[in-house]
Length: 316
Length: 316
Image 1 (cartoon, one colour):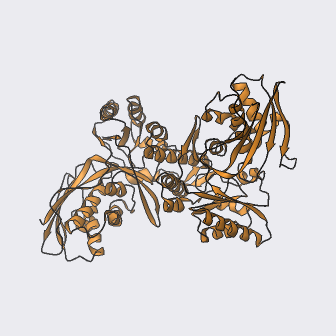
Image 2 (tube, chains in turn red, orange; image 1 turned 90 degrees about the horizontal axis):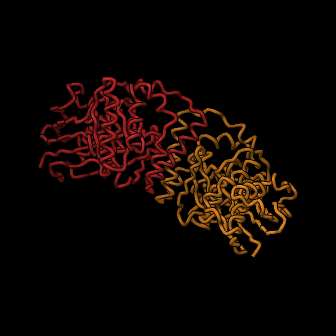
Image 3 (cartoon, helix red, strand yellow; image 1 turned 30 degrees about the vertical axis):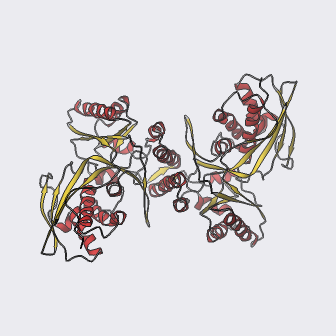
């Protein structure tokens, strides 16, 4: 086969208490990418479906394109020629790790297509280059979980230290994307550069509690720890009806609820699929009560990372 | 039997990255307390050994005394009469949780002596009252691990939420107490009330990494996570030769090394007893090079909490 199609999952970064260090992947939504080998060297984006024309078609300016190019350069295979078709299956700029999913799908796909010259964990820096193009910084809290699956801690960037945490088998995520725009740069700009020592201590307690809750597993501890006293109180003002939607999630049985990434999407975690569905409906209802439509996605926490949908690796 | 002797372990609070939220217990040193029932109601401290006369003999002003009194009041047993002999087996005001060990030993002993009317976890608030007398605040990061054993996270005070984390079977602690005095109030006073968001993120990453490292267990991750960018850089200036002693610990194979509680004692963690011994000798040598004598203690992380040394419970 000279073609491969790969799915890479959407991701929730920050996860309440873990600003810039936590992220997890979901089974739905996610992006698909199809790579086809061709004779002429170089990476060419031949089509992007589902972005309403908003993403760059030039490979070196596209998050998936740059990830693939950086990877090929690293393994000294700039002789490879690839046609890329990107199928966006989630809203852009929504806080769901859209750019990360594309970058991860791209770099995972090319590595599979070439017979897996690198182990998966080694693909992370190339996917992070995709993030650099998309967001201006090579952050890992979306590409980490999209690539590795599960729940990920970015302990450090210098040196890069990304740790995968096992999650309970039954942990369901509700994502609700209200149809409003939040500029990621605004979302970062409004944060204060200083945090009180008191709030730092509270947040550290929740960070420790969430990791212990996931690893034990202890759902009540997960629930008690899904609290953000630093970022959420500031960013929530950018999301109309945030408090009402969160309240609706908790009243309908969610373990916790907060902003997904820098928003405007929100996430909630639940112990079973039915609760997660109810939570989604209640959150959508809260938004709709002020005339804001939304999309809801319910799925398990993804524990596998990217998935080959069709095509066989070419051993070269 | 109308008498009981109990040992309660010393503790290391903060544990590098976990200011005010982490603590763990050690097998050595620790305090011993002997309680003897007598007819006349009330708690009377009949002797304190090893404190050089520095601790209050009046029960209501003594950390063990007040813990026992508060407990007896709570279970409506102020009719009980007790003679208390406290055997201090560690330096006072040293950052080793001396007051916590006494309070825990006292309240654990009286609960055993009376036939265990309360489960161990319920004894925590009474031991915390002992800390209030000793330190001015009812903190739990020493009494928590002394009472429960192992590694403890104080996730929250309102409501009190103390979580016990399993530690690897082979984790050894070196404690070195340099013979200098650090006033705990000074140690808190010099801390800044504000932390940069950047340092908060770094510290949260290490908090998450340490919990994941302990629970996995992953010794390398424990080692990488035993880093404190907030408190240690400020408090280290109160401990002469801190940097040299820490460097000596790391060069001799310690996984990590930092201040124990608010100092001046220092702790280091190691994977085996021989390394922990070498680390202790190297740290003592560093202090001695500037004329500071010290005591060193090497033991496993305590995983059991208090221990009855003699005497049988009286079922009443």
